[in-house]
Image (spheres, rainbow, N blue to C red):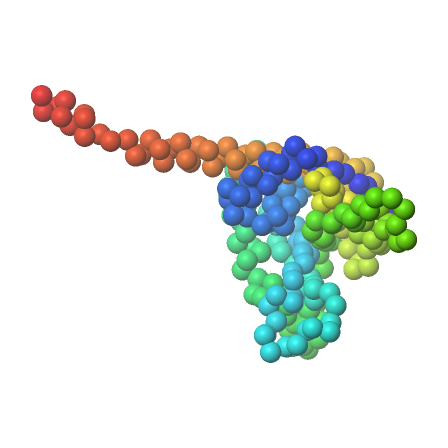
Length: 245
């Protein structure tokens, strides 16, 4: 089952501004917003979330990949702190950034350690699998518009392959995020045998608000820090002269 939600262009402008100010990657903001939404709907705690990494970026240069398609996407778990929207935004994004960037080589060896290499697979088998999968498909380009009656027409719905592909990794919930025409789409796929529909509906409603609130909090925190820095640069020499007089 799928529950689609969107974050509008105006709110995404604030998200982009927050990214520039903090240097955070978009998937880090998406994870932090997920933590806020779960904390708001379910309650404070921790949840294991499977995220994806671009394995192609970390393979050795001597590995020839010119004739291979895809990104060699890796899937690995991240422990996400779930707290309410009243929590400190800077602390949340720093915690998510640390959790993601501490994973060696974007998790390219996790699957081998958990499922293939016997000594570690035996130990990791006791760890429960993540119930949530967060996938970010990036920004989907729009097909070129050719005036007149061209011999070949492109399908105008470039989001269809991402939007309609059925989840296949066995998670109870998959949050599939992509951007198209300036709007951020967040589709909640869920297994109705394992998760109640009303809970997914509540999460789907809370997530866009959590992402927008997180971006605004980060912007306000950055502006406050900049204002404090400006105050620290005030020249106090005039006060010293007045005191001597």
